[in-house]
Length: 291
Ligand code: C2E
Ligand code: MG
Ligand code: MG
Ligand code: MG
Image (tube, rainbow, N blue to C red; front, side, top):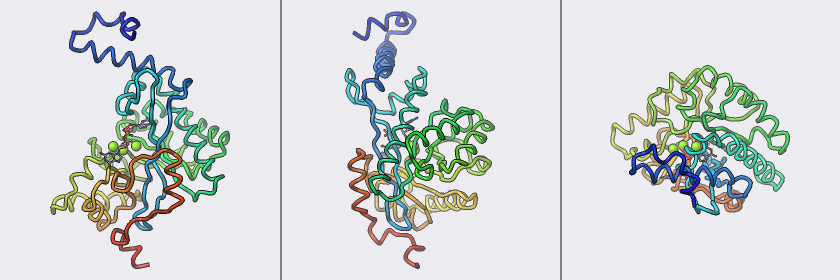
């Protein structure tokens, strides 16, 4: 079925890339109806404040259950959406849905939480702040409950534009996180002119934190440099007790990962927050214990 509409471009590709091209075309075609068909939803991965051991927010992660293609991972469909220009509409849907959920949770009596939304490079437009403001008003969401996650690649595409746009967004009260830190080539100091509140250390980096003296030095250096630049540090992809205790011992502020919880459906996240499950006492930071 898909092959018919794909006919126009096939001849230009080598046979071994045909299946890749066909898959991309199938994704693009199905994705263009995903919003109207109600196939998109957000999951929420809890983020824990390591000083209090409590859930302080979540990352909103997009899920797509396609009628035609089944469940497709964001790692596969987000790049397609970015290449074919659908990311604008999809990113917009994500922002609106996250804000709708933020307002609904507040009305339902949940404590204040910060929900982080991932931003693609193409969403970093001069009018972003005005657009965000309009969505906040329309949904009744508190800007103090919204955050954006941007990667180094997004920032570096046009640093001057990124700085201006993020400053406007931040002035609304929205928190800015630097996503996947450690996967690119930038140093924290080269990013210090940008209005970044939180550095999210990438899971590939967190995984390497095994406790060797070299790892400990690198971890300590990243955390103290971020703190010196008035940024907080969140460790992503945290999976083991060992990683957690090392990060806590070195002053890491927040964490997110399978160790605490996978991304959850909205209802399950709400239940977890209501239970206020907290971290075992042994993992709480020294500051907390001293208090
Ligand atoms: P990300 O922003 O770095 O999100 C973290 C990813 O790591 C998520 O994958 C999450 O499920 C996964 N993860 C969380 N904890 C662990 C752990 O302990 N171990 C391991 N191995 N993985 C963990 P997911 O949901 O598949 O999302 C992949 C990427 O897709 C995200 O990476 C983000 O770049 C992108 N993405 C997701 N939703 C959106 C969105 O709404 N807009 C945009 N532009 N990108 C999105
Ligand atoms: Mg992210
Ligand atoms: Mg990340
Ligand atoms: Mg990552």
